[in-house]
Image: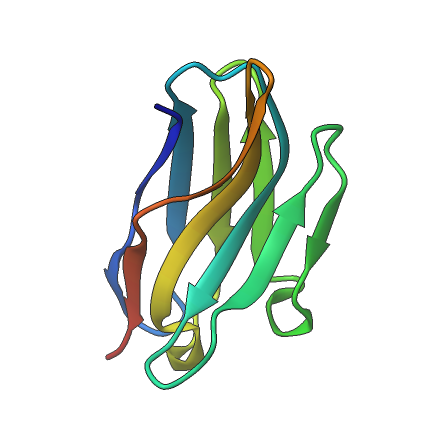
Length: 119
């Protein structure tokens, strides 16, 4: 069964850094775009950053210059490096990807990892 497993969340002070990881497993044939979303309490889930299978990245305006998305296709893993974190970055962060398993294409979500920015 195709799945995404995230790690790397936690509590950090304003101005600090965190690195999130998300690894796909389970019969993966090919992984297309990989993305990070976040959802704060009372808010809708929002796209934070996305990276194509060829490495083209796009970002939410409020994280440009602070967050960097990257991927290791040999490890089926996407990363989100978050620097100069602000309290408004506090949210549950979810990994999402379109993953091919044989002839089937799965729109797959991770379980989420909590990021809390607070002094």
